[in-house]
Image (spheres, rainbow, N blue to C red):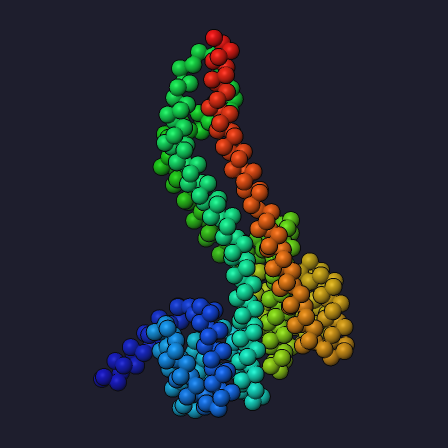
Length: 364
């Protein structure tokens, strides 16, 4: 009975872990230290036990210990990790499996560290570039709402009994202020409903495909999204083929690591064509929006010369640098645009408040 309860408890814990995430920095720490210990001559199970004692997250420590126990019992490292695929991902597990089969587990772990670090750095760059304008816009929205609800009604109330025609900016501000004051809760409810509807819609597959198509064609942002996806595709592809994973299998894995639905769809369509023996460059050339001619030409040349592994790394490095430069430029561009927008909003309020005073002076 106790044994049965223990098994049920383990199942519940495993189920819980499947819905939790491991931060990329923790996976980098785990992978890097595991590679060092294996190089130092530790057995895989011993190395896993050692790394588990250095991991700060308790539940992640438990997972590593369970993986170590499974390895001791004779399971392969990849099969032990496969129970936690939602945590480690298909790319990670398949590369580990390839490393075990080829006897190059240490090299595979080091390749994984490079791949994880590059992806993490690029993702952080994107998040940091977007964080600043989002914070500024939120702050402006909160301050603007406070002014409309608490400050403007007191200021414009002076002009309500005016016997002369108020300027258009003043009438607009007064009408807006009255509406928000009288229907504030309804306005907030409508905004919240719209936000929830948009959030739910963008999770629907039928919406994601056209939405991601539109994003790729936006000025400035579309180019950055394209470069980011090419960098990710090339980096993951390089990592997979450098550990001797077949090209068709690599494409199947890459589709599970991409985020833009247009790229996922294109790579899924590419798999059956690759199985027919059509070259990679020719398959990818069918969509020159997703894969520019330069990338296609580089892949075609690499296929012919047998240097696909080196070329995919070159493409990845090039586009990672392009995304980094573009995001730096975007940050520089966004700041003055936001300042102009803020200045225009302040100027509109100032004009709306001051113009009636000048009109009153002229009347007198």
